[in-house]
Length: 485
Image (cartoon, rainbow, N blue to C red; front, side):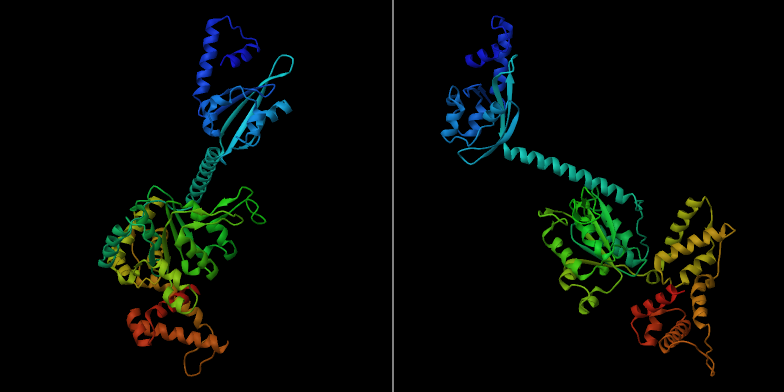
C-alpha cells in the first residue's frame, strides 16, 4: 500500500496532510472491496496494486502479484496477454480480452495516467468476467427486443376493435358453448373454432382470451387469407436486417414474437399453403422460431386459437391440409352453430346491434313486434354478420323511430339476384337462352334450388333432403348465389 501511496504522491498530493492521507486510504478500501478487478502497474510494468477481485478472476493469491512485473506474470502463464502493457506502449486507453490459465475469458480496459510532462506514471486496469458482460448485453438486447415487440403489438392492436363484445348465449347450444369456454379459457390448450362465415368465431376467440390467464399479454388476431403467400413466413416469424430486398433496415419481429406469452388467433387457417403449414407445425411442436436471415433460434410461448369455416378433415383427405397439423390444432374443437339453428339468440343480437347504431348515430329507434317476428322467421344465410348489416341498413334508411319492414325486404337481394340470372331465359316450352351449356345448367340448377326452398318454406335442411345433397353444399350454393349478385 505504501508503494501506491508513493506513486499517488508523485501526482502532486501532500503526504503531510493527515486528512488527505485518510482519504487516500479510504479510496484503497473501496478498491479492495470492488467486485471488478482493479490492477495497477507503474511505467516499468511493476505491479503496484491488485485487489482481491483480481486474484479471484485470475485464480491466484492477489497479494503474491504485488511487486512482481506484469511481464513475468505472462511468462508464468497466469494469463495470456496484458492490456496494461498495450496501454503503456500506445500511451492511450486500450480494451481487450484476456484468457486465464484456467481457460476463463476476461475483458480488461487499461487507462494510462500521465504526469505534467506527458510521461506515463501508471496504468490502471479494470477487469471483469467476459461472460457477465455478455449476459448484460444479452439482457439489454432482450429488453430492446421486448420494447420493439410491445411497440409493434400496440401498433398492430390499434387497428383492431378491442371493445368488449360478449357472445350472446340465450339458446341452449350457445349456453353450453360459453360454459365450456369458461373452463377452456383457464388452460393453454389449442382451440379450434369451427363454423360458417359470420357466426362470431373472432368474438368467441376474444372471449376465451379475456377469461384466460394470459389476459394481460397481447392478443394478436391474424387473417391468414389476407396475407400474400410470399410474405407469410416473414410475417409469422420476422426477419433480421438485410434479410431480403425491401426489408426494414432494423429487422422486424414476427407475429409469434409479438404474441409471446399471449394469444395468437389464426382465422381462416385453412387458407395457409402446405409449405407454411409445415413451418407452423414445427413451431407448435417445439416452441422455437427462426427469423428470416438469422442463424439463431428464439423460443416463444404462445396460446393458439385457430378458426375455419371449411371442413379440414375433408381437406386432409384431399391432401390440401396436413394431417399432422390438423390433429395438432384439433385439440379442443368448438363448433359454432349458424344463426338459423339458434333463433333464440336472434332477438338479443338484433337489440344489441340496434343499441350500437343508436349510440353511433344518436338515434332512439326501436324494433316493432312485427319486425322482430320477421327477423325470427328469416333464415339468415349470412349469419350474425348479415343480421348486423340488416339492422344498420334499417336504422339508417328508416324515417321513423318505429322500425318495421316486411320479410320481402330481407330476401330482396336473393330475388334480385335470381331476376338477374333469369335475364335472357324463358322457362316455358319455348325456352330461349344465350350462353354456354355450363352456364345454362348453372342457371337451371339455381332456379330449381330456389323453387324447392320456396316449397320447403325456406328450410334448408328439408330442401337439402329433397334435393339429395348435403346441407353444407346447399348452404354454399345459396351463399355463392348471393355473392354473385
